[in-house]
Length: 248
Ligand SMILES: Nc1ncnc2c1ncn2[C@@H]1O[C@H](COP(=O)(O)OP(=O)(O)OP(=O)(O)O)[C@@H](O)[C@H]1O
Image 1 (cartoon, rainbow, N blue to C red):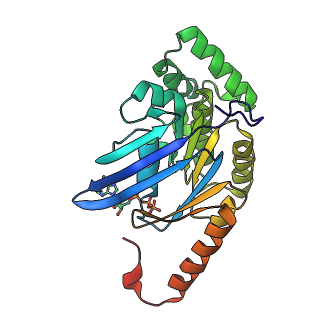
Image 2 (cartoon, rainbow, N blue to C red):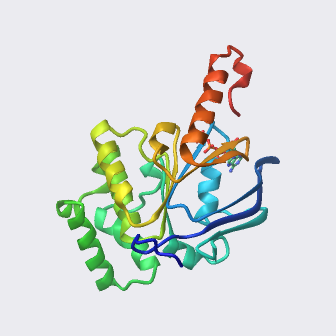
């Protein structure tokens, strides 16, 4: 696999004819995509299918039709390999954190991946040090603020060293400093990043942007062109006074 001077190199994300319905309604329809871009942005209105795409990419759900491969792995079928390959950071850390202390939270994914207790303890200690958060080791997760919980989730993902990190709107509700710090950290990580956001400008420097509309790819390509087209269309829709046009 090509390295491109970028540490662990590129990972191909390939969706082939992915179709998925929920409650009798199509959520994604015949979505196909093949890319080895390192920084991928996903834009789209509320309900366009972005979170569903994120969940498919990490194998949390399976398509009704079609396949999702990440680094050659069929993520819906090979759950163990998927866990090692793809990490996801959700919008709401309360949906992600399940353990009472930070150490337990960071340890869980590592043991799921097959690390023994001693290995996992070393990894947790290293990650806490890297983030300057050794003093959080025994902190109660429920006592942390929203931004602090989000950082715990990010550390848990980074600890597992996935080749692909999916970010599903992880910055909403964070103050500007925290957002900038997490953003700067994520910009440097040696992994492919798939970033779902309602902030098109956050994706300007990305290699690829994908615009989802009603479960289909409306446009994909170099980020600046897709962002400009998306913003122009959203501005046009936003200028209208027909509320029946609200997504959903
Ligand atoms: N489990 C489910 N049951 C019923 N409908 C669902 C389910 N999951 C997703 N949907 C529907 O699929 C559509 C896409 O949802 P999804 O969460 O992927 O959108 P989104 O683009 O992430 O939206 P937002 O920007 O508001 O987070 C929505 O209409 C949603 O109601």
